[in-house]
Amino acid sequence: MAKPATVLVIDDDRTLVHLVTNALQQEEYAVLNAYDGQEGLRKMYETRPDLIILDINMPTMDGWTVCQRIREVSNVPIVMLTARDEPEEIVKGLDMGADDYILKPFQITVLLARVRANLRRAATEPTVVRKDVVYSDDYLTINLDEHRVTIEGEPVRLTPTEFNLLAHLVDASPRIVSYRDLLEQVWGFEYIDDIDYLRVYIWHLRRKLERNPKEPVYIINELGVGYRFEKQK
Image (cartoon, rainbow, N blue to C red):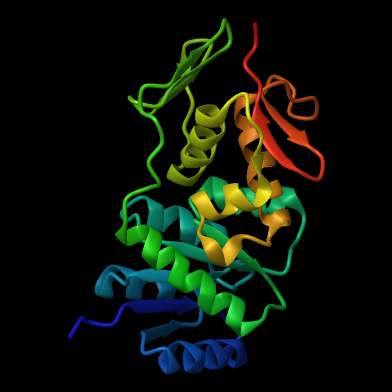
């Protein structure tokens, strides 16, 4: 019988931790709890969990700092809980290395679905795209085979999720990829109706790749349909 995945929940709200712990245990996960950032880091080092659920607003050490410290030593999936829905705040967590985010208040069924999806992605290879695709102009170069992106010759650091999202768009170019297809291909079927989630990641990717993220020329939104990668002449 397979060993159950271990989930570390780091949050100073003890009522929320109790609720999340009970829900996870009913799904037969092993659960560890920490009520501030420093305790969470200590338990992460000691136990090496399979996934971490991490609050942002905590005393002693906030979730952004905790996430950054974890990323220095581990690629464990991190799902951040945040009451802040501004794209800039969410992107800050993604920049620190978070794999996913959930807005408070949230439905426990959504959290459980995200836990399953992140554990599944961590255990499987990314969705395959054509590895021979190379795009290059005088500003941006994308090499899917070498897993490399550069801007004016300087490397751009993309997370695995960001690169996978970009790869699907480049691979499909000039075709439009629907919102639902992108969400399912990159994140999994649990995300197919969460278009706002996709918009945040697209905005984040544009910040890294576009000369002017507010007037994108590469990652184009076809309203009501999906996104496409526009090759420049």
